[in-house]
Length: 415
Image (cartoon, rainbow, N blue to C red; front, side, top):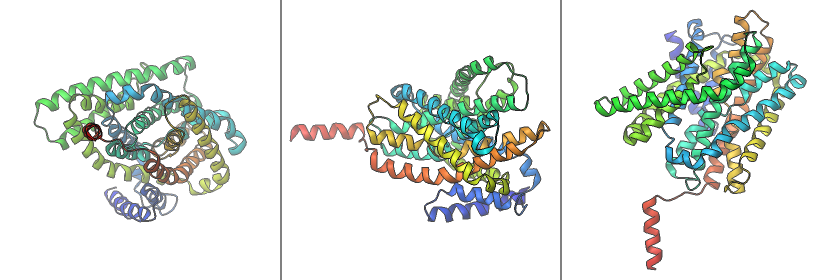
């Protein structure tokens, strides 16, 4: 297994560099490395590593959501809270419903299988969106209306919402006994309880970090460990109390940022370094799960499903922003920022296939779902990444710091 990890790291770093040279997100190169080394092509990845692939993918998702939490302040959330809440639920719901309706005709899936596919595709990618929004926040680009923070907050909750819905749908599909009314009610309740638990853990960690002389690196390790425990708690409480562990993980950073910015920024900087390794593991592992033959057969029909879903999502974004103070270009930018797919699709794309296999069911629909999930990454991640960077720098105005604003006002008044 150690040799497999070494091969993945070296080849992924080379592929990441090569793809960036041609202005394509490096994650696409990493994904292709996983496909190449996986069991469907060269078979170079150790079975032991593949066996723990789902855990590794979840840890990578936790890391990127932690980064998001450490960049969201209460002041900013108060400004964009209403719009962010709508953007967290409406666009994903629109996309999921659209895919549910067209999946049977285009892919030959049942409506429930199409709904499972919709729950895989309906999430925006934090791996693409979070780093770019953090960059815009640091540049104060779009800061006057807090557009990057609005997208960051909404995209993060969007991901958790989609994963919760996905878990419910997969459970229904493989025949787990469920009370559907309770499961629907459990979605908002799990988000609230997850946020409350994360805030509590974040406050406790803040008190510990404030009174100790732990280095930032050790603080990061403690934060990641606590986040993993919170996500694991979700599985222990399954069937008893609804609990969104990923929301809890994200809320940890919110509290520490609110209480002590210096500590939060130091942890956030080191999380960015951890993400380098986590990204390699995430996308190489999902690539290794891909059945190339099934992905090829899903081709044009899969692309059509993805494009219809993206169109429905974009329409949902524009509906959420109707009547807001954003300009037409800023609304279009926001819609574009919600199009890339990568992280969540990589993290949960293979879970329906694994659930079907574990339940002794035919795995054909699961392979189609995974293939379309990978196609969505290949199709939307490069285009979305490029469009976010290009439109953000062109359409989001840079807001000067408060001190600079005061200086300019004084100069203008004296002139």
